[in-house]
Length: 321
Image 1 (cartoon, rainbow, N blue to C red):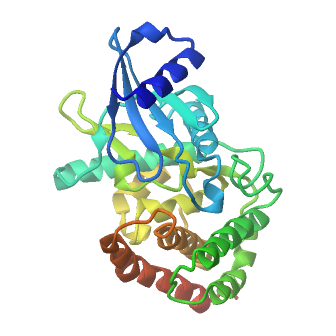
Image 2 (image 1 turned 90 degrees about the horizontal axis):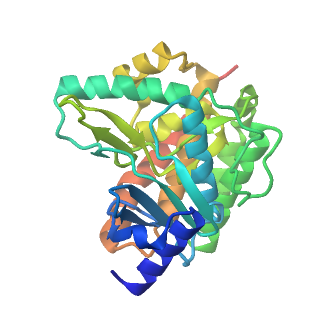
């Protein structure tokens, strides 16, 4: 193994109180889109995951992401939701347990997929029972937690728009225009009075599926680094990435079975459109500091940008009177 990787792994084990001689192997893990992720295999058979923050440029809210990720895993443990458990957190790295399974893919039958989506709905509803001490990112990247959701979300959206201006990102509408449209819907945010645990990155790659007895089940919800305390409705964006959660009957059935509230009246549609704007702005803006290849840039412009436009147009068209 490389010297730098081994030194990082040994330091993590030392902080966790595990003997250096127990490290057998460090294995890079694929799938991470921002942090470096590696599996640590110990001589006694135990397996852990070590995640390390990059040193390069990023978006404003990406400072201290691992603090937020650790907070998500602690919340998931409280809710009884399968996810990694925090072993140690020290500055730019996080050591956690390894969850069983592999990222959700397209190999399931229609019946298996429906069962998994229903199970996922129940898991997410349980996540949303966990309340936080304030609204916003627990990392403090955008300042202290806010007393109200409108203030927190406004700061989050302003930050990514500032990033877009700073990195000279090509948006489908000018940043100032996006901000003005979004502000027109901020009144709908006042309906959110309790800050709830929101993963905000539950696309299939972050949902592990295991087959302990042949039947697929959710093995763990991972990569909770985008977590914030806010409106549970915000999780519906990545759960139906570039789509519409209202068409996912199996997920919504499971979510409601476990006590989740999923109503789509005009104020809720406005909030959902705001959260779509926020995520799609992140996806467009991050292409610059991450220096992605031209194919990824083209995909963002051709696929993500139209979804941002559609969300803005929905905000402008929804009548809550």
